[in-house]
Length: 166
Length: 166
DNA sequence: TGTAATTTTCATTTTTTTTTGAAATAGTTA
DNA sequence: TAACTATTTCAAAAAAAAATGAAAATTACA
Image (cartoon, rainbow over all chains, first blue to last red; front, side, top):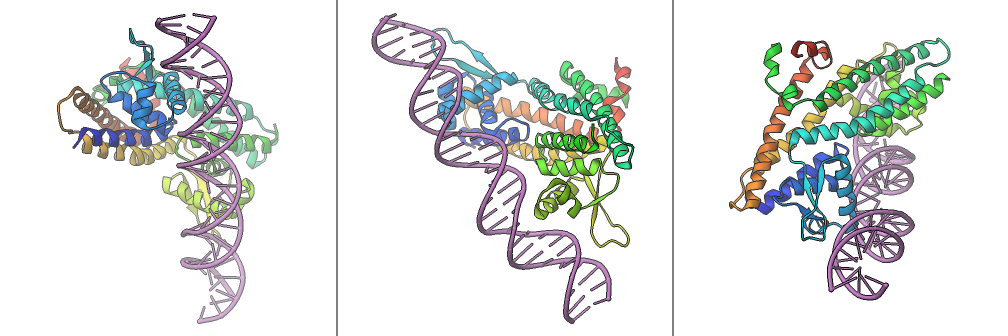
């Protein structure tokens, strides 16, 4: 297969995957482009490769930097800013978990605490409080497990320790 | 807090959370409504509670059933179909993992295999192949870890086994 | 089988999300 | 500081996703 075709297909596919992970398509495509690039790229190069506007390129590069998935690189003698991707997949996953935990788990926890006591003792109220309690217990476990994951080595989750508990 | 206010806030919040998980807002709201309901509900009741159209209610209930997050219940003496939610959060998470694995990991793997060999040995081609290889290794580990999770008891991931490897 | 209730489908409309592009701002060099 | 290059912002446009509602299909019961 031609390199160009491979690149296009990979960028496309990574973009689709990103959409399911709270990373919009262009954002994920930029990440893909930087992943497969041996050199860091400028916003201008990103715009040209992906055929998007400067504004779009700039906004999504910033978002990627916020997520910790892309780093800014200052090339001596160059005026433009250059960008390179985090290429370690375990790091990528950890960064995504950190963001999503912040954006999803924390707001949910706030609501669960707010609504955990309701008036009355009808079956509906009882069931409601029970479900809220269950979800609270579950999300607090998820919270600490996710913390453990984001602080661990990839082998902790993937690796040989499996055999230890078999 | 009034029960109704608590319900509304929870349904709203679960809907938002769902949007980040490949479950559209209404789909997640229906799941939330069924979660906190002591009795199974008909499509008509769901439509009324959430103020949505029948078509929308029907389509999203079907989707929830596909995901395994909602079950159909046949009430003797009733003509309508009734629906109840999967209320065990660990089951909910496992069902979501199963769906997302199918919808995301499998297509990615296919593309990675397709593009893993490209012409030439330029730095760009070398880097491309290296990145594809890395992602392949990573996703195959993720794949088996996710299988393990979906077959395990919730304690496996959350629970006391942590202490075993400390 | 005929009738009414229920469920499903899907073209159209509405809503939400993303992108553009042009203007404003910031930064660099001579 | 002037002239130019690069970056950021954001209102408006475009694209994508979701919801409606009416018609079609299915199902249950007399």
